[in-house]
Amino acid sequence: MPVFPIKTCVACGEEFELKPGKPGFANRCPSCSEEDADAGPKSTDVLKTDKGANAARREAMRNLLYRKDS
Image (tube, rainbow, N blue to C red; front, side):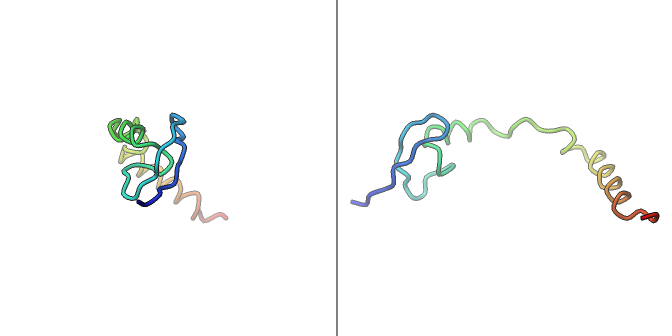
């Protein structure tokens, strides 16, 4: 019988055996890993998903990095 390392979950503090193939993070127990997976994507940042904002951000960075007077 293989012995698996005993870890403490960073979310709830419960001890669990870290078995190969456990879904989720290695520092979270299986129940906390399932809850995290069920939550879905975190709140989406409008600036990260807006293509117009991304284009404006790229253009501003390009202007700052490659302006002629420096």
